[in-house]
Length: 565
Image (tube, rainbow, N blue to C red; front, side, top):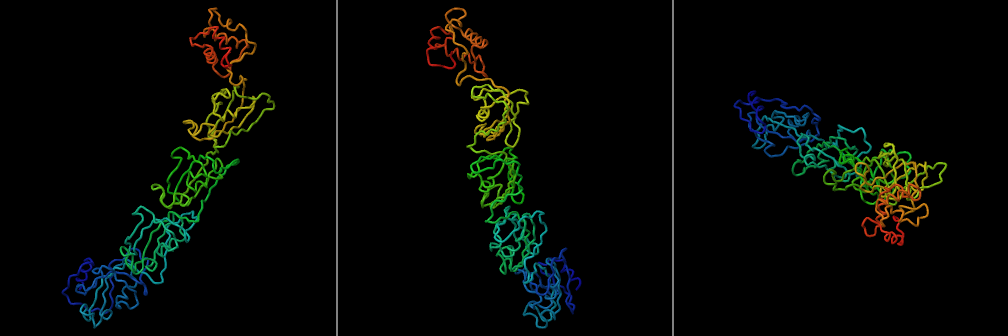
């Protein structure tokens, strides 16, 4: 008999055991041999539990009389409710899921003297090779084992929230029946409104983003008596290993946190403003999806005009230059159910950490703050040649340039388009020694293109300037004027060699001498020889590089030309 038992234990429980020639030894009581015990036994069978198990039924000689494997389904039954022969009822108590037992049952605890039809003769000793796959109790509810919970849990799942989560789904014996990970896509659903099996609806409540749980549920809260028709058998307990990635509620608006507002904040954005800002974008579980910093370029847009997603449009209203804030945007104010198709999944909550670099409005003009000296008599005007120092920066104080670095002033003629229009505006009506703080919107500065490597496109400019010197310009449109009466013998004075014509060199020498003697003035800030050459060309009617007395007279008789004499 011992040799027969050893041979049975050495064979797979899926095969029919070979018969033993030795006659069976009488059995007085139940014998249980634990042939495999799992390392962990989370739960042992108790009277009243419902179990699912596989078995092979044999006689002591190894002859098989029944097998659940042959039928392709487990045997499902309550324990201790007299739904089994007494020996099996007793033998299943205390078993763990995945435990395997060889159970030897004497006739008085099996089918006794009557036997069971033609299958089991009277007074038969029965051997059962049993593998327990599942156990639950009608009183069971959802069991939750949280094995990781983030330290920051500002919000928990509530009824009617929409969640995104990954899961592995197994039976109680560890058999995998489904996984969102293998599909590389989260499971997205509302919670607590019947879109899920009841056990999952309950098991997800109270979770935080990033939390991990083992959710175990009896079949009454899972797929019940019938299972799902494919991978989940009827009356099966289910185990879900869940990590929550995202949650929101359809009623959610944007959430602003971690605000850092600079002082002072003289102006806040309004709808219609154009904003330049940096951002890091991530999902609610911290998964990074985009950053303006990685492109080394701000994101530039109008706000309140639908140029960006609705949540960002709203979040960028009422911010200051230099302000930092974290913005949480629910999907209905973000990229919705479809996402972006690549980095942002559908129905994803978005988190942006933003830093406002600058903003302006298309209607903005140059803003000038003035610090005048005590004595301020003569003010700059168009045509004046001005010399000034400046420190230039962006709105966020990023330095651009400074004349102090070069040890010399910046010199321009006002009204000659030698600087951006905003600086032209800022330099008018100044007096020597005056200091100004000038803020120039991009449409009066370097526009959408900026200056490569120096000024970003659409950037607001800030100049702190000091006027050092002013040379009075000529009346608007004039490049040369006489300080005294014009000589009636002007042509003869120019014609030094008395050949009846004035060459360019004679013309230039004469004008330069008049300027040197204080009798005439050239427009300051320009190349004097270019001015004089233009004057000569205006007098040289036929373009032969010589001015005759006839040409000279003809030109003096024509309507005034400000490059002429």
